[in-house]
Amino acid sequence: MTFTLSGDEGSNGGYYPSTAYVMFIDGSTIIHITALGKSPQDGFTEYLSYPSLMRPRWGDYSWVIYVPGPHGGIFFATNYIQDPNCSDHAYINSNGSCGGTRDPFANWGSSVNVLR
Image (cartoon, rainbow, N blue to C red):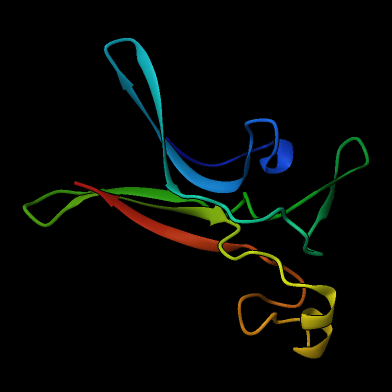
């Protein structure tokens, strides 16, 4: 199972939105982080959900596929916050791109990984 791991916004032992997968081995659940998030979500890509909560969109885009063969494996992708947030000054002076590390409305990106 692949997913976006997050919690406590990076404090109190939590994580900024990161990519991860789970393996179930001998009755144990092991979480592997494949791309560690570097800052909190701060974009404007939320949507309204029930009951009247605003939810960010970056967890919506995940996939996994198994490719057989000697060069195959389990390929998966999910979303995470790949770059540290920039200062307000840098954001304003770069038209919201923070030096090309983000979109003006979202600071999340995708991580593509393979298990062999």
